[in-house]
Image (cartoon, rainbow, N blue to C red; front, side, top):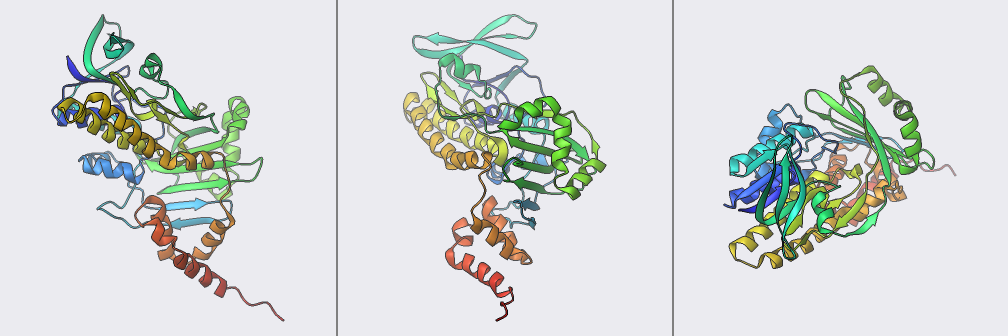
Length: 411
């Protein structure tokens, strides 16, 4: 009998399995996939996620996979591109975007090294019950015999369409229908050496062009549109994609001159929800428990953060610091507090709500002043305290400098 069975061996599941195994718990991780393998999902690891990889001793492996650090940020908000280099903090000065077949393999190997047992190519068909509690899994190895395994806790880390969540009836709340749809591929020879984002808020032409470097000298180049564009995306995806890139002429020309190295990918079901994350004998983590639009690339960092919260709760429950049910109830509260921190902001971004005029004024005033631009981006990634950069006196200083540069009107 295992202490914990984790269904799903990708970002959330392998991270959780590693953390629990390192605490001495007997852990089984199962996944229907075999590894290494890719998966359709965002793979930009924001700073808070990269800090956890660093703390877990895994960031060096990400860097060694030929995944370049991302230190340069260029964003256009329908006005002009503004390029900055946020300062580092806590020994980290970059974000990363490893392909999922790289990152998931690193995490899975780390879980095995920590002592977790992994079985790949396993299809979980049902959950075992002991009264009203989940007590294990009923599964089969692909092309193999059915088997059962029991555990004190079963964790669903099996994604947006989680079988564990469906089987236990975990209710969704704060749910919002999909707001965007997307289309992307990978290219070589783009000249992309940092995060590049080109946004349009113009009614009828709303879109986000997003690109960044990843493994093997390639760059992801993606477009997200309002979900109302989905019928057209399904009918003419490739032509719509190139037409959208050409709205930023110099950028579109760069990508047209590059070489596509992978197939096309479409994102057509980007739901937004929280699910009840725990109950008698079960818990959810990662996309199984919380999913939102990828426009701000928070999913992997959420998965790591919530895996840590759940590992702490499970350890408390299994070691006798608290009852398991009480510890999981605490995890549910902490997970919700963490998830809500950027949920509403993500929904606003995915709805292409334009920024307030002050943002454009501030961006215009920053032009030509690299230290302040870098601070502006540092506040975004979290290396500069936002309350410091956006303090009224600092914003007034920047805006006043811009006003002084405007010639007085004749008269």
